[in-house]
Length: 105
Picture 1 (cartoon, rainbow, N blue to C red):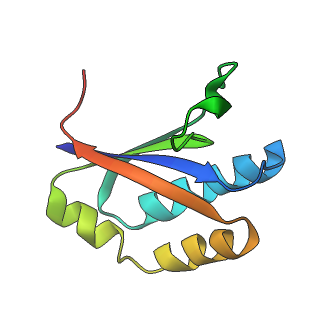
Picture 2: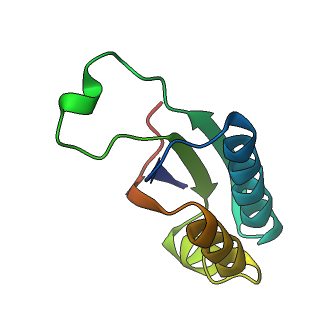
């Protein structure tokens, strides 16, 4: 099993309800792909002063568990995946950094 951990950073602050909807949409489309074993999403917990650090600061974290890299590749080509991503990017642009790794614990 591998985990695909995405660090999602929206260009502008989102209303809480919009962020909740984004996370629900991503979770749904990932699970609907049939290639994902689990999805966990969380909001970033800001720390005072972090905005002064020249780095990608998360809005949210999305962790996806898959059997292997082949399943991960298939999940991202599943029907509906790019429609969800494109719709959110058009409404609320964001950047994503990620890491593929073995389970941490």
